[in-house]
Length: 282
Image (cartoon, one colour):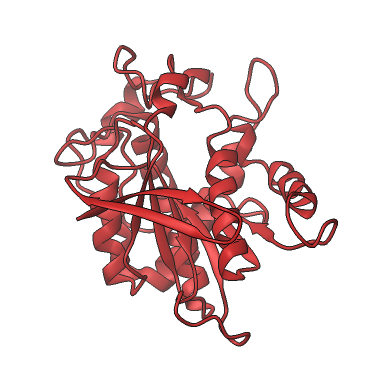
């Protein structure tokens, strides 16, 4: 396995590589298009993915004729198994060889967050501590830099409408950086962040921007991935199987139910048992 640190300069992207056991990532970007082919006819996109939602969404873009280059982010998250799963899925979905980007220093910044802080347990219910502040914006920034370098016009990530349901206490979106307004605002930033100044260069797309819920995106993804959808990794931990108890596992299971697709995911604990014990109405 090859891990890389990436330095982006004005006219080049330098990848410093070394062999080691790579950490897992919750954020994975896919740069579409083959780097050796920069012809105007090649359809290019960059897709940031992490698991069920974003891998499936990237597969949908693959089905539209976009070649996919994966980039995986190691930011010190607990769910590091995702990297191995995503590398294998990249091959089975005919994506290109993935790169691993080390931004582990962010773990020091993201203290007090369930996904990165070892002193905090992951929970079945949503709480604000499960939100990694502006994580998607950071991933989209790196993905957009790659898109500019390879001439891609599209950047995608896996945010969906279920991510932006209002919190019961404040009314804010559950995950603010999943909101389509965030993506569109970032598009506007990119107009002025590189040449030609003031010109729209990249469109950022997600299931949320298409108005899709997690279950609706899952149905589309299942249509193009088939049973490979069950190989995606959603759990916030890195156990042999999905824990079945964390918020992400619960949301995964509920999406399969809502989509009318059998959930063949292997769980340590049956999510149905968790659903019986936890009040998800609050």
